[in-house]
Length: 282
Image (tube, rainbow, N blue to C red; front, top):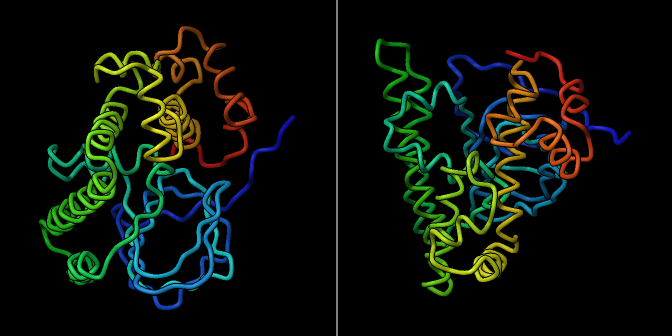
């Protein structure tokens, strides 16, 4: 039976939100995230291992890590800002910002690392610093709502950066790719087939997959599956929802079909994957 990677689950944080200023921070311990994480890198050296992929960490850029991912620094030193937030904290943000979070974090592997030029970094840095100062202020009645508003602004800015990177290629193809990603982030639980999205976008399934590979190096079906697997992992790790119910929530015909899909993509059955974690239902 394939083994499921073991990692330390990060500690709970007050109010499901935290922001820290980093100076030569290392991340030496393999950690499974209980919260979403944004790291604004000012300067760095080394590499970071996220799930099974290794990324060089140099220069000014953003790292986006989703709840449930495993990461560890490899000879890594990072100076910058780190924001951690839970879904319950994000719910304080206005509904209008929800699509930004879905696009960036529902399948974080598609935009794990976003490069920043000096101008964009100079726009982002003060926002992170203002949020950090607000977080360090004494508690008051609406403090959490104020921090959520700042986080909303940061997320909208990051979503725009991500969109600008997409628009940097062939305009028509990148616009279509962006629409596909937004559709998947909203409809992946109900729509699993590339053909459905291709029809909505008025292209053939083959054309849509080719565009996705050109823009991200990943096919359309892999992007949809990535969303489904990420959601399934979150439910298995952080809830006590029965596997049968997870299967139906994700619109699989039967629990057996879901189990087969999960095992094919994760190399472990849903029950084995869930049993490897502690604190289920926290």
